Amino acid sequence: MAETTEFLGTGRRKTAVARVRLAAGSGKITINGRGLDNYFVIDAQRIVVMQPLRLTDTAAKFDVRVNVQGGGLTGQAEAVRHGIARALLRADVNYRPTLKSQGFLTRDPRMKERKKYGQPGARKRFQYSKR
Image (cartoon, rainbow, N blue to C red; front, side, top):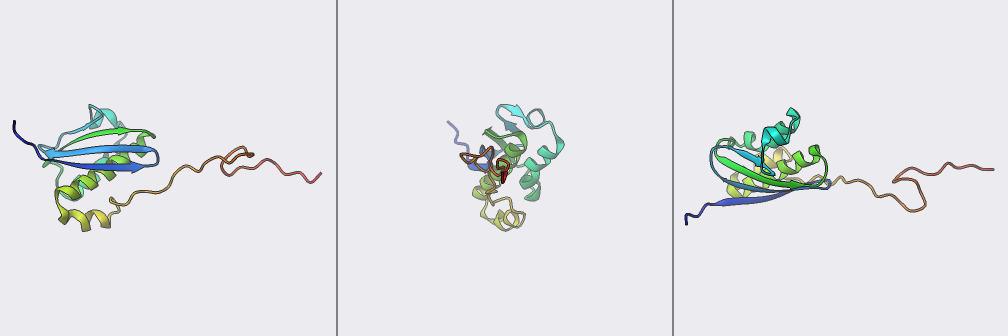
């Protein structure tokens, strides 16, 4: 059996988690068994996913397989971008300065704030009345 080298990367954004596999190929991107154009129908989300590959000129060198779940489509697109950047780093360490300068290796820590007990929401408070 021929051994194929795959580079793995995990990307996260809000509640979305993307598990990315990079393998040598022709540039085909598959997300949850569907093509990039079928999964992300908004152009901005497709551009976000492709950013690390275009920045490192590896869009035609690797086939990308992604399993992504949780969150919304924008969060998933950014999680995929984070995962692809991490996988590219495993493929070639020399990409690190390029990817880091654009912020693709940094996990975005912003999350939804939890609702507090005794109040209607995370920040909202019940109306105060003096009398």
